[in-house]
Amino acid sequence: MKRSKRLFQYMQDHQQEFLEVLEGAVRRESPTEGDPNDLIACRDYFAGLFREIGFHVTTVKSLDPRFADHLLVEYGAGAGHAAEELAQWLKTRGRFPVPQWEPSVGGASRQLLFGGHYDTVHEKGIFGDSLWNIEGDHAIGPGILDMKSGDVQVYLIAKAFQDLGLMPEGARLAFLLTSDEEAGSYGSSALYQALAARSKAAFIMESSVGVEGDYIGGLKCGRFGRGNYTFRAHGTPYHSGLNPTLAESGLIELARQAVRLENMTYFDKMNPQTSEPETLTIGCTCLQSGNAGWPTVPGDGTLTIDARYSNAAMAERYDQLFQNLDAFNPKVHITTEGGIEKPPFDKDLPGNRALQVLAKEVGGELGIEMHPSVVRGGSDGNFTASTGCPTLDGMGTTGGHVHQLGEYINLSHLAFRSAFTAEMALRVLESN
Image (tube, rainbow, N blue to C red):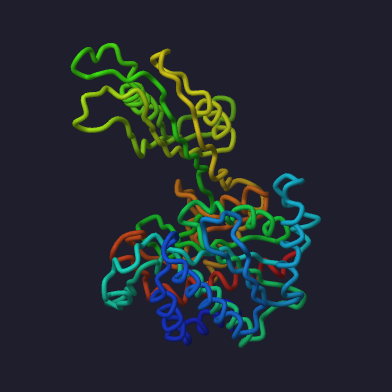
């Protein structure tokens, strides 16, 4: 029997164990900015799971004090070495640029990096007493799809390697479980970049994406970059009854800016210089100015936008525009805060292309046609890919209603998704 089929059989035979472990994770609710004790309880749960099966476990301090600490677990040759390298890099990080992946370092390593997070968007208690439900082919619960099921997949993959004697000699698995992905990874993005630069490849265990809903063979092979910006208008207020026309209104200025900025959105517009289609989306997310009922035209206000770019050149170009936004009213001054939060994840980098080809080969061996897709949502794959590290995202489970009540995973897809990722990991670790 081929190895990939043996892995599939193993995942089928251990699906009940998978669900029991997953239930424990889901029941430990862990909102990103919730009670620190809840986050610690969830992190400690995962630490215990991996420690029990022989992983070296390290708690890594968040680089942003607003968020809880992260978890780095390692298994295989030199387990603990990644944590040591990370600690050394953190001591000198202020003096060096973002590390970049190189074939002679990352490419020559025997380390595969898994990326996951244990925080969720769901406010504690919002699911009521229905923290864990199985209805037909669906398991339902807060954060089950995004992304505690993906985290548990890594656990079961490691157990399969142990039980089946498949772990390649001299190879190491490193799995970073972070606390702040849903908030933008402000306290962990640099950790991902440092680890990715020293890894052969990175697999991000976010949920899959499919050509039709939650298709079993979905993958994420690229992501748009993301920028978050806050524009502050500084004008002159005036009494709204005596003579409102004397005001230099920040509200009116920002309202005009909101319309202008959203109208910049375009899809698949051909760039004549590169002959490649480009997409830009700008969403105005909040406009605040003045006080309802007060007899005053406001002078000040704030507008926030979420901008998504399909490539790095666009990100730089529009970032410059946003950092120096021209006012419609020259008597209103605009300042800008924020910038590019996530760099684009380019599907066409050679290492990324190679993983996509390999994914189709492995999926075909298991009887499934894989569909790698580019998505506008961001993840920690943006950070690993930005270093040049070969990255494939959406390696986790399939499901739906992400970030909503009723978030679910498909039980009938679990064996394939876990066996597929396990075989992909072995192929990467065995490759030259």
